[in-house]
Amino acid sequence: MDVQWYPGHMTKARRMMEENIRLVDLVIELVDARIPLSSRNPDIDALCKGKGRIVFLCKADLADPVKTEAFLEYFRQKGMFAVAADAREKKAADLVRRFVQEACREKIARDRARGIVGRPLRAMVAGIPNVGKSTFINSFAGRAGAKTGNKPGVTRGKQWIRIGGDVELLDTPGILWPKFDNPLIGIRLALSGAIRDEILDKHELAVWLLGFLQKEYPGIIENKYIQNAAGETPGEEETAEALLLRIAAARKLLMKGGEPDTERACSMLIDDCKNGRIGRISLDDPAQAPAMDEERIRAASQSEKQKTAGRKNYKAGKSGRKASEGRGKPWKKK
Image 1 (cartoon, one colour):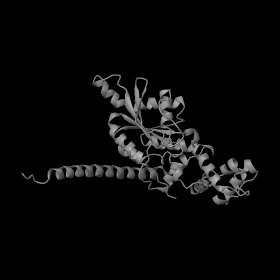
Image 2: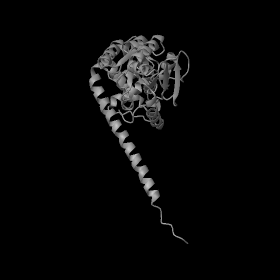
Image 3: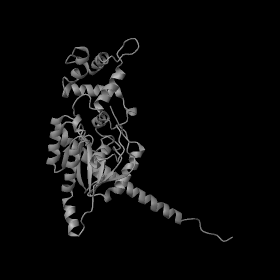
């Protein structure tokens, strides 16, 4: 299953981030705690090179707490500021505010040495679609200053939000990257709600999810969908296709004639996964963190090369047009 989604407005958003990165002191990268590796955009690495970074694992209340702690430890071992919380909680904003000060300690010291005191620290808030950037900013600011919604693509333009007198946040639209080389990344992003439903093969997505849950969280399907509803449990070797039929029947999702409606069952499973109704699960595996990080670094390097090549081609084309314009037909006196 190959899930890809990169609409045109993301190219524009990426360009806006490129133009504004020089205005900020650090980047607060928001990732989904259920997929903290799959939701790290390699383009953000390429764009934010040389800037301080805080990794905020949003939606931690929906993620597997054991795996979340393992991911936090992994990020910290790599020397990164990392925090996991529900973006709506005040303690999350307090933690991030402290990390902002720590991440910018050297810059604050340099400013003081030059006699600059009280200048607000500027941070760009970046991440994938529907990760919770606007919710995070509103929690940070203590007011509804940024648009929010449980669907990808709500924030489209550039927004500066002043937080007290010491921090300014630049909210940016959620962006993905042009191609997911690892197909599992596209699947996990889709199940987190980062990709629009219209382009998804819901049946394949639901079958993958059921297989994953059977392996990683045995018993969760029975407890949530079958045992509680119909008083029976599926066999250990039951296929995902057979499970879909049983889930549809147990939840009374039926077509005319009484046949189980697996299409509706697929939609229900995907929607429940996006909204955390299945339980506290994480789709990324901490054991895969080093390998996935290497993959992301390679993708960031490739993105940087493409960006550099694009600039060269643009400049070459521009100079070529100027030269062509200068070689007009010789003027003849009539």
